[in-house]
Length: 310
Image 1 (cartoon, rainbow, N blue to C red):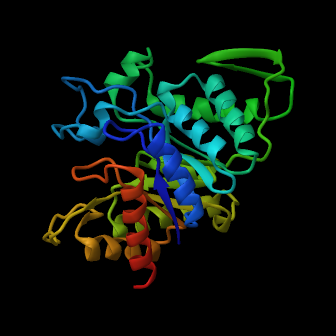
Image 2 (cartoon, rainbow, N blue to C red; image 1 turned 135 degrees about the horizontal axis):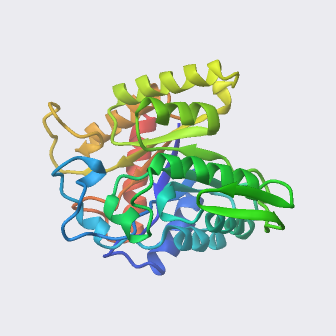
Image 3 (cartoon, rainbow, N blue to C red; image 1 turned 90 degrees about the horizontal axis):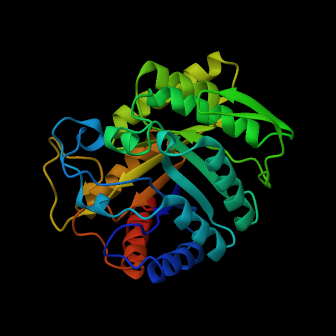
C-alpha cells in the first residue's frame, strides 16, 4: 500500500512556506502523492451536520479551507514526480467545463501524468445554495460533470447539450497531456456504488471502518466485473483523518485513525488488508494537528514506517 499526504489548506498553516516545504519534503521522502480537499464556506447555522450527519458539528478546520485547485496548481509547480490528487472535489460547487479546463491546466503545469481527479456529490446544502445549485440533485450534477470531463478531454470539436451548459462544436483546450484517472467518493447507496463501478477508475472514501470499507470495495469490484471491467485496473484510496493522541482510546466506538500511534498504525494495516492501494494521511483536520510542514512530515513518516514494519 502506498502512502500520500494531505496538503496544507487550513488556518494556522502558512500557505506559502508550509505548502512549499511539505511538497519538497514529501517528494524527497518517497511519499506517493499529495492531496487537497474541497470546502467552500463555514455556515454559522448549517442546514446539514458534518458529513451530512444530523446534529454533528462542523470541525474547526473548515473555518478556512484554501481553494483546492489553486493549492494543487502550486504543488504541481513545485514538484517533479509525486502524484497530485483531489480528494474530493464537490461536483455541485464547480461549473463542469471550468473544472475540466482547470484540471487539464494543472496536468500541464505538472508535466503530465501525475494528476488524479477525485470527485464527489457533496453533503452540504449551504454550499450548494451558495453557488445556485441547491435545488438540483447532487448525484445528477456529478453524472453531468463526468459527461463534461469526458467530452472536454476528448477530441475537438467538443459538443454537448446538458442541463448545466451547452457547447456547440468548439475547441476546448488544453487537453490533458496524459489520461487523468477519475476516482469517485461520497455516498454508499446503490446508485453511488453503481456509478463508481460503471464510470470511474476507482473509489476514494473517508471515515469508514476497515471492515465496512472492505465490504463496499468488494461490492464495487463485483459490480465492475458485471459491467465487463477488470477490477485490477481500478484503484481503492482511503483518506484517513488522523488524530494522533498520547493515550490509547477505547476501541468500542473509536473513530478510525483516532488514537495513539499503535492504534493508528493498526488501522493502517487493517486498511491495507481491506484492499486499499493507497492511504492518504490527512493531518490537519482535527485538534492537535501538526503546526508546520516539518511537524506534518515527521508525523507522516512515523506512521508510515511503523505501519510498514508491522
